[in-house]
Amino acid sequence: MSGAHQASGEADVAAAVLAILRLYRGLECVDAGLTPSQYRIMKLAAAGGERSTRLAQRLAVAKPTLTAIADGLVAAGYASRAPEPGDRRVVRLSLTPAGREALDRADAAYTAWLGRLLAETGEPAAVLSALGQLAEAHRAGYHRDGREQGHEHAAAPQPGSVPPQQGGN
View 1 (cartoon, rainbow, N blue to C red):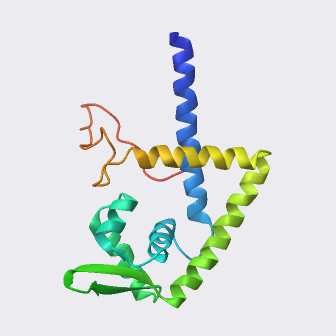
View 2 (cartoon, rainbow, N blue to C red; view 1 turned 30 degrees about the vertical axis):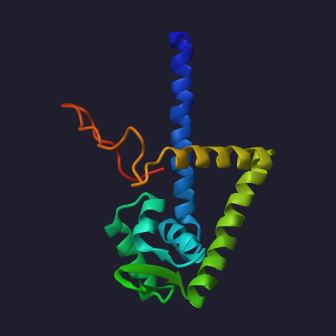
């Protein structure tokens, strides 16, 4: 691949990264009644009471992060915790009826938001297929402990480097 062609490909990937970040920011702005993080946890818990440790692994978040979000869901009446029969160290997170209703409302809000964007593409089925392929490639890149392959340790910033910006579009 020529240098100019490679630079063009890198620019395309960088533009895609920015697009993904803008889309995530768009999801954060949807009035769904749940944050994207709450939504992700509730979607997995809705499939059946999940062990907190397993939820953290599947979501690729630290256990304390999951615990903090789950605490908020329990306080809001959207989820409940129950000890595992026979092993009190294991806690399962399950949705309450109010949590299922909140999840249904969030599903409708997020689906409507994405549906409008997909309609603008002119090729919604192709975009959904590409997103599914991207999600599957991402899932395949995770170890059992939830860390990306090849990224077990974050690289230390180089002297004189500028740290990444927080927030924004």
